[in-house]
Image (cartoon, rainbow, N blue to C red; front, side):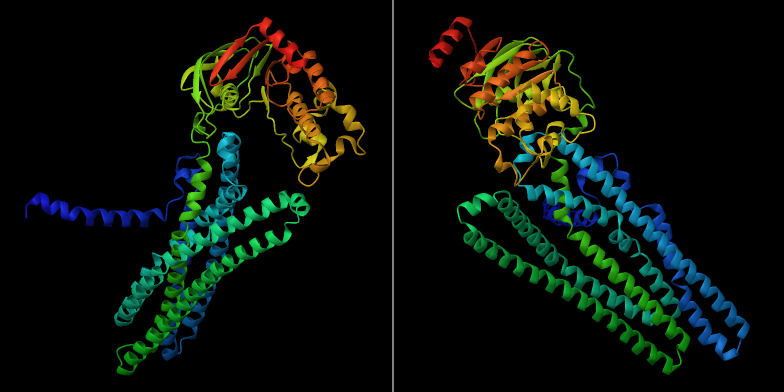
Length: 591
């Protein structure tokens, strides 16, 4: 066989070994997305914990050494003075050992809480700056699990799990001291340790699969509960309770089976650990007693080996459990990586963008939506002067969606550019503080809270005046004052059914106006409004003409009539509507 063939035959084995080695090392690493964030240095075991663990494990040698001296020297020589020194020193060591454990727990708890806090804040910051399509394509339970994964990550990589692995190297310290006292017992113990470690690690994959199944089923359960509670009134109206109950029972049956498997695996692991601890003590006593009988070992050395063996078993079991937890942590890491990948270009986001005037210009802009809607726009050229109104008329959804997506900066054009006051519109969308651009969709967005909190976005301390002005502008305040609680009327899940969609949509429009934006985008926002509300909205917008740039999509001729310029958006083409044609079409449709 040639050297080239030999290399080819060895390469798969080398790759397999490297793959397994890299997988083993990855257990100790935090999620990949966290390794590039600003708090990456905190997702590790603090040096103070390592120092405290070193002292704790070194102090763990005090008891066996004192027992060895007492049995072999103090008692045979009846040395009370030596005994008093040894006992006094042992009390001091135990006090310092307890103090170090308390300090270590405090540092680990603080470190875990800090990582949980900064990771949670950073995650929400990136989520709020992410594209809405990236958020809405996942179920709510998925985002809940991903946020919970941050806390799990903090507990795993800055908490007790990592501390258990920090103690693992000190097992060799205890076995080394035992080898000095009794080489035969240390050899027997080492063989038992290797066998136990291999047996326990073999169950790691089973535990990992069980945890992944449980997490997936929990997501399905939470999705079911969230959807059922959010549409509870519809379910009751259609008398769907028995059918939904049967679906939930079948889901819980599957969850119960998986839960049973998980508990059984955990119980087997604990039983295996307890059995190993007992087997270790039996082996030490059996081998040590035989040596004592033959006179090759003293009674004090046997007692010291028992204490060292017990301490070694404790550290080994805790370390392997930590290893098992970290090994089954792959799904949690994936959730964290998915959470931080919602906004992959977050590093390019600017802190603030201010819109000076609201001048918008499309320069041969082209794009095709990749959200499945098939919307596109080709070679769009359009200038929207600051303070003017632009109306988009269309009988389809795709082309206006592409136009609005470009204008909002939600998508970047594949060709050409879209600029707002000379700055790329995509930059404004990626800004953390883009309050100068407000957007209202055709579906009213309502938060759980009062009407005032919805309009002010919970800034009731400083935003009341602007909220009332916005409500007065579109004639909403008169309707609010007719309610028993006025602005304090609660909205949200379970309470919005009492209000018509027109009322809720006007709240959303008032919220956008209350921010006093330089650019207001109404994406068919008046579609659900009745004639009275539509007239008041139209009059209110006309009163702010020249103060803000307004771009709206609508098919109502009366609403399009307030626009300074009108465009049609059909089949990916944006065409200017001449005023004569605009007036003729409006009069024909009105008649």
